[in-house]
Amino acid sequence: MAVFATNIGAPEGPICFDDGSMYVTEMSNATLSVTKIDAAGNKKVLHKTNGRPNGLALDGKGRIWIAEAGHSALICIDAEGKELRRSTGDGDVKTNFLFPNDLCFSDSGLLYMTDSGMKIAEFLDGQNFADGYKGFDWDGRVYEIDPVSMKVQRVIDDRMLFTNGICFGPDGMLYANASFTGEIYRYDLSQQRPTRQIFGNVLQPIHGDDFAGPDGMKFGTDGRLYCTVYGQQNVTVLNADGSLAERLPLAGPCPTNCAFTMKGNKLRVTEVGIGQVEEIDVSCNGLQLAMPIFD
Image 1: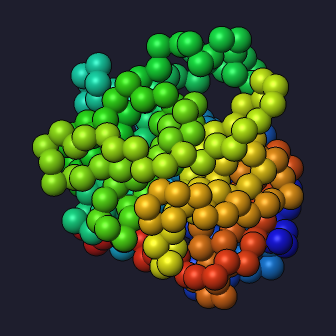
Image 2: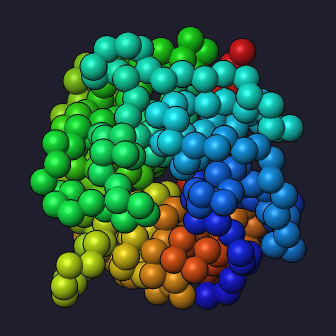
């Protein structure tokens, strides 16, 4: 394990590029930005949202899509940081965004976004969960969104317990997780209302009341799922059948997301406990992400 970049304000949403640079979001109150980190680990703020930017996705025209939890919005900016599009949902109780968390594109050009299911002010006490948070009325969701119209096409799932990471697998299925249960779910999008299938669970036995749960995740070309587990200080790797393969230890206790480098079989992990990007050696490349081209 190596440290790629330090002094990052609660990083999330990593995207890696061929030249060794990457994008992250910075969720700390002092930053609240989309930031570019060059190959040497130096950072430059690209766009300040002043909300709480979380997950990122890139389309085929280089536009950056932001799951903005603080503004309860989906935001699109260009590579220079100019805001192009914004949506807070469609006005219905089930399609008004609450806590946009993470997102990914499909090969068909649709955007899939998790919503953890409650606005920040309703479950946080400062920077920490409020007392009794797991018993709150969570309505975590998975949305299918047309990025051109910015309209929700379908609610893939709802009533989830803090929906978080999302990605597509080599089987063409959509995967999303729930942080409070530790479960990874799988969805067959050919169904009009996809059934929630349990794929696996990434939690290990813990002691005390410290929170741990799955966060951002990606598939490798080895067919395995690499999932950061907040509070567990590792990336938990699941086999293609959902069974535990291994746990990759990290320096920081609270990883939030991961992205494969474009070269060198490495996985970069954003970590908020220390505020850095860590880099670990893995045995494969990342499964190619969909980056559709559309107007």
